[in-house]
Image (cartoon, rainbow, N blue to C red):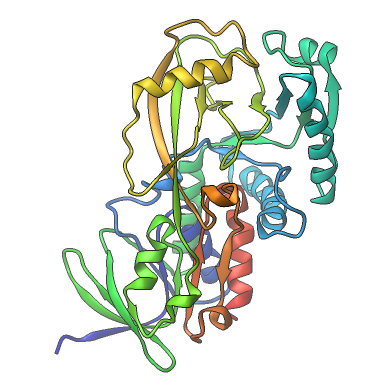
Length: 370
């Protein structure tokens, strides 16, 4: 029988949320090992998003998404300043493209205020034209605290903190299965040097693979796992100069926030994501999807030239509510009480605003596993 490695705490998943959780637990004094299946951290969902710091406008009051996005946003801006992580508080405009959508902006303003976001306002057509001359709309909601961030530099900072507090990040280490013991979790870990691990705490923060990890653990009540759905989102990059200095969002669509204009820190524009409900994970970007992008973008930027969009990349959102439920669904963050085992915690449906909320999510996990 192979030797079993005994550890205090294992976090499964090296995306931005898993890294934030491992960091929080290490700072709290736990001996933490993070296991990442891929050759590098953050190479799946965390590198396939808009890199937006969300303000917390859209989510239902009292939801985890609302609470943790707003709290996480403040922590993230402070952390970026402290650690010199590239970011910009560029702000965003949610644009009503017709008169009927103006009522939605008023509703969104009230939702933002209910979530503790008190710096938004609705502006008219004249002020919109003054702020962003190339953008057209009947009115817009201004969100000054929305921003953009270099997510890879953020993850590097999280890793540095993990290691500074005695933790370790181990790559190429897929979890193949496991078993719940009375007061620990046993994991079978593959890779170049397969190993059996017995941990006093396992936190499943594996993102898209969270369901597969939990499903491979003998003794875990499958009823604790919420239903899973995949929503694919494609992005297209813009050839030429960005038409705005702020992020530009339309009124949301079911399952997402609509095809919006985001900027990287160099000022390059990209558009997306759209929403495509899929059964399997695949990251191909169909160039023909650009047809719908042109139509959606021209609702707020009518001067978009034909042929200016190029396929960029795609990402997958792990959702706990599918298309029939409108594509919403809150974060599911389970401590030992919810999983039914004293040594197991699990996170499901951690999609947007997961990056923004990462530090607040980690704080919640830390409190649940104390």
